[in-house]
Image (cartoon, rainbow, N blue to C red; front, side, top):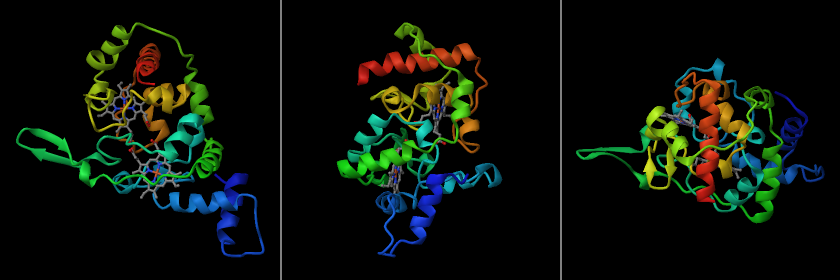
Length: 233
Ligand code: HEC
Ligand code: HEC
């Protein structure tokens, strides 16, 4: 998708090193050039690529960051990046098989680069402008509500097995998906509901299985991440 900002970024990158032409976005373009070594900042059209491309991705796609993250969280995280995926972005590469079961080889997980407060704010502004999937969020039509923690916890664990891959507490749950006790602080409510309902719509090669959950269950799961998340703020 060629939108105005991408165009400005492309031109700025093209002209990088041309000192007499200073564009307003040039600082951001410089910053984002490093990020683009690992993250997709433009839609890579995954459907047109082989499914094995997921294995070779270095980092989560950021080209829909503006539909995904809470800006406040983003600014803070970019300055102080703490691990979100306990076994990294491609877990099979970081799991050690042992006689007592599997464990995560944390020594193989690199630290993320940290930005200054000013760079984090500027980077977040740019990332929050990337919103190609607003229609997915709107289709989910999720209105946050509430439910008992106990009912939510059963829905997340026993009834749907989300805890096989996700942690809903720092010391409980699977390690192959992003931690979810921080989901409500990190992610926009509409993204949470939409991703649970149809992960493949967000990422054709996602490692999360699509479950065809009914809308009521999706709402319960999203509400649980809200209710549960309030304990971990
Ligand atoms: C060497 C590769 C690499 C570079 C360079 C890099 N990142 Fe990352 N980034 C990662 C990996 C791997 C993760 C997943 C970390 C985790 O889950 O704990 C990540 C996670 C993120 C996340 C959270 C994404 C999500 O979906 O959870 C954001 C936001 C982010 N990076 C922004 C940036 C920005 C901005 C830059 C440039 C200043 C950058 N990264 C540079 C590898 C990289
Ligand atoms: C087989 C493992 C697995 C199961 C079971 C699973 N997920 Fe996931 N989930 C993942 C992975 C892996 C990702 C990240 C996608 C990727 O990296 O390709 C993800 C992503 C997500 C995200 C987006 C989080 C983010 O930071 O990007 C949410 C929300 C989510 N899952 C909720 C759920 C819920 C609710 C359930 C239960 C219905 C569930 N998941 C079941 C593996 C799983």
